[in-house]
Image (cartoon, rainbow, N blue to C red; front, side, top):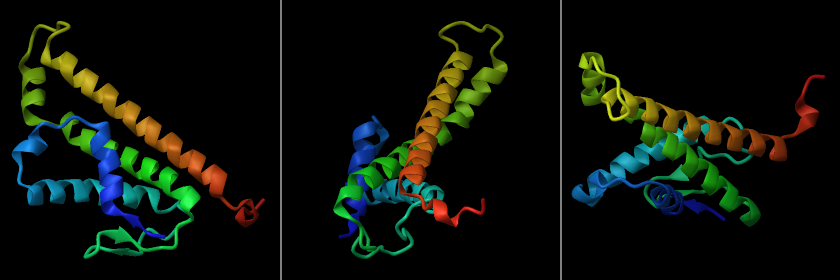
Length: 148
């Protein structure tokens, strides 16, 4: 059983609110979301028990023989990794950084506060994703390969 890109991307899109996507053409939006998918897969691939490099971009599907009981877990982990990838650029937005660097007043409504909150959201998403990957690795790993 394969896993379609659309299933993973659907899980990702249900976790975020991105109104800019509505203004984009479907092709442009797809390219951006596919980029998040590829980067999330790259991070998860070393611990995944399935070969995520077996994919077909034409049919938009990961083609390894996935056990149906593992599919939901893999979709959840990869879509969480995509959330992390989606949040990362918000940390480095030029407008936010310019406002932070030029603002003398640090108030609860300041751009510096916004940057702090975006940074915290990114750290939380990264932590959640890392924990999910660790749990997956623990639950599906083969301890006999360890050199103890």
